[in-house]
Image 1: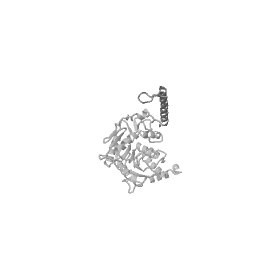
Image 2: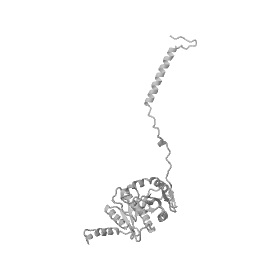
Image 3: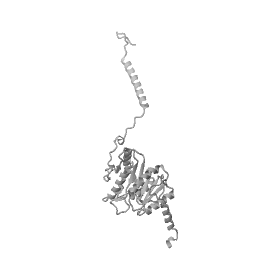
Image 4: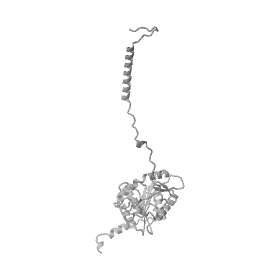
Length: 312
């Protein structure tokens, strides 16, 4: 029984105080425990890889760009003087020796000048040193271009995304085309038939097929550029026949003269890139120097190999 303290307030014993405090502590503990039990799990802590800044590019800038181009990573980019957008032409060169690049640099320069004057940007890429099938060409730059080297094609294309992304950022265009010349033409055909690289159209200039010619993806428009006295002419005739057999939309162009990428060839390729994404092939009206003669040549070649001919 409590008594007053002389000021009208009840006197509470120490045992009572400690009992109340103990009950309060228990209730607080229950509340805290219940809150912890119901609280959502903490957010995961980012890994060191996620927190790290993107690694800076360690690619050595291209030092082989022709006049009119600028190095962007492992490629050379030529842009029109006017502002973007600019459709992009990816150029795949012919094979050349490391210390004798003069002809290739000239081709690259002429392509850049003619393309940019028509509103196209050009991204010139380079094949691998020693990438040729021939063991005697260890100092030549080559693309995968035959059944022996096509296994490296995927690795080659996987090295491109960074430079392609930069080119797209600079051109501000989703339109993309491929022009392959000579060794690069075989590779362009390989990219198209194996579905290794997406492009709105391909031009195969003075090259040929990498067997088998079978569409493993879509069938983008193709233009075959050839020359009557070209060492690759037989391969171009064979490629035309195989594309026809597959029902692959394509067009052909032929000129007189030997192997090479002339200004006339370049203009035909650019005209094709302008028209092919929006027109049915073969083009109508046709390109200048359009010649639907490959099919005739193929027919003649097939007749020449009919049974019995070898015995005459």
